[in-house]
Length: 423
Ligand SMILES: Cc1cc2nc3c(=O)[nH]c(=O)nc-3n(C[C@H](O)[C@H](O)[C@H](O)COP(=O)(O)OP(=O)(O)OC[C@H]3O[C@@H](n4cnc5c(N)ncnc54)[C@H](O)[C@@H]3O)c2cc1C
Image (cartoon, rainbow, N blue to C red; front, side):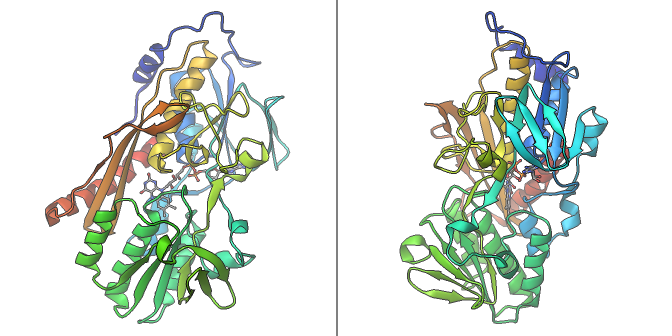
């Protein structure tokens, strides 16, 4: 487990020298006030480490939902391999650590006054804000994706009721039916996620509706872990999965809810079940606060994750603009740790330590068949970028023993990151 104890975390902070003449930023509270908006993987991990590093800092986390469902492993719920309840987490452990947990919707952030307003009428002042709102699904970017599209063609890209809806639709599908999953323009949350979904749905269909087919309509022409996906499709699900790349007419241009189809430049694709995953951008509150640029994501200083748009606001997780770094829970956690160290150092008038961001991502192709990718990312030229030659992918042609072991590691990975964020 990657969790650090207080001494290790402070040791890392000690690496930063005192900023000459830097004032202590604390306003009101003895050691400063930090507000964290969003209690998903990024925000929960950031809040935990700030409180652990310095219990004198007043940490408040504001989250709109009392229950958090992990997107990692939610494709297993869609495929009937796991139950949604096993992916349910909450912030009770944070409250027990002395972090103030507020269940409310943040509706406005005032960067000049350094305060946050909630739908419930609360105003909270901060010295440093950590904003981890995740993604917003950009339905407005696709013609026809109007009211009702989420029910007709569940994205299941935020776990919870959507996950169950998609599962129920697949369970109700006839044998010989067609399931389509769409892949939006990059960057989006979890680059391998749509391909994993196609694979695990094929796993379900092979057992229960073997005459059925899966089609992936892709905006792009390559996919992450491509040789591994292609290998497992031909080994485990021969003839079941068709991948239509962007160059071959895979890019979705329109959806038609009434006809229950998606349309690309080449053809109309009616289907029995469609998981329409739309393009994405930073969570709505980040856009409303003027923290995003033309990319739709929030530009940040890669050393501290402080917004380059508004001082004293640090962006963590999927909402941050990160060049080629995948939008994953693993990276959200790494950002949570980085922002925590930066914020504690800045509140103490020290210079923040230089970060490295590690990503690990496991894919399950069947309950006993897994593979993975890992990479290292560092600040360079103002962004977080891939360290050359640092990305390692499981080899193709590995034995079933290796595949089973990777599947076991995948479950261990989820237990670790969930414990770090929520337990
Ligand atoms: C199908 C699928 C599979 C995935 N599998 C993996 C995997 O195997 N490994 C991996 O590393 N990653 C995986 N991911 C990606 C991972 O889920 C995300 O990268 C991760 O959740 C990002 O964390 P976050 O904290 O940025 O955002 P989130 O986890 O979305 O958390 C954001 C939180 O902010 C809250 N919030 C938003 N706005 C407000 C507001 N205004 N006020 C109050 N609260 C607010 C939301 O309620 C939410 O709880 C997967 C994603 C999907 C969709």
